[in-house]
Image (tube, rainbow, N blue to C red; front, side, top):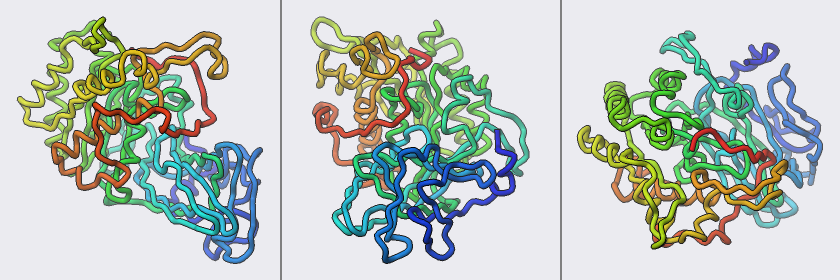
Length: 432
């Protein structure tokens, strides 16, 4: 799907963009409110209809900016890899409030506020992927079999896409450079892990980048809705990872929901595949981490969570012990979390919305498996808590955005702030 017109351009991996009016800092590419994405040059905004260029004079780089009263998206054709992105945000004559996500709503910066006249620089580190499987020499040896719905996703499209959102997002400059040294955390799993593109759906995987130190750690989310361990193999998703993962990288594995739903038992290949993945990761010098599947929103009459996952979580715990690998027991933590919220209140963490809350949604949504952004954020905190509590080597790269978290004391949903993206869909993801 690579754009033919930008094949030569796409090999470029370092970019300096000056956002604002026509005048640009030396060595920077000027980006104005009319810079619509163009396949020939390989960069620009997805939609320019609501963009505004503001020039306050003074410094060429920080004296002007682009803003909008709606979320806006800037895309760059760029080869697969890890990148550091330095963002210059603020307004030399006013205040600003910016949230930054990348690709499919992957949370990077949350509600960055600048005071009047203040300009800040923030760095994020992003994994960009395509569906081609390459060997160590870069030669194509296969392809990930994408589902039809994935072909619309912003994370398989040969572009890096940055979403600027919030009440007053003001962007002065964007600098993109390759990062060859960050440890990569590869996420594998199903719809409860995937980078969900559409509001109101969300998963813990897309919240995880927010809690790690940029430049040092990058999250590469390869999870997809509806997948089992077997399907992940059959579609060559794991082959893609085996050909990219490096010594010192991490492989997080969370499967169970769909394996169980497909009528499989833990004895019908689940244990065997898990063990094979663990051994292969170790052979490649990577660190496997097993993550037990979180509970569904199913309570008994005593307000206690009912296990709907058969023996899949316990099988994973046993394998972690047998193979002497790290285990994040999200199943146990989610039980504590949801019971602390209570049967009714915990619906606020799942996709429970009255009819017409979202476009083309004539019926109420009541999904006991999939999470909204608040629920996904709380689960990501559980994952990070486990990393910190167990003193995984990764724990030294947990950022200050993570404050001590207790699943028995969930964050108040009223205090959770998430300005919604423009992509919305009431269609339930694959899987259950």
